[in-house]
Length: 71
Image 1 (cartoon, one colour):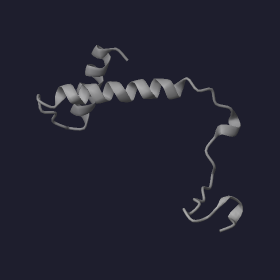
Image 2 (image 1 turned 90 degrees about the vertical axis):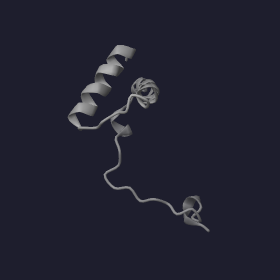
Image 3 (image 1 turned 90 degrees about the horizontal axis):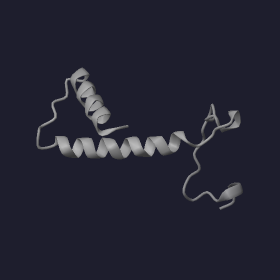
């Protein structure tokens, strides 16, 4: 996104959300939104296949559980 697109997006989003951005905070908000947009652009470049789809069910592994279930 270009700087003007980022400004327009932040302005529109904050207006829709009725979120007041103080003028002192605006440069930081724009900077971090630009950073996030850059990261999103990198992620969007990764090719995905159907098997990359998120699982229907996720079961987390506890920090003390080793691979294969052994402790």
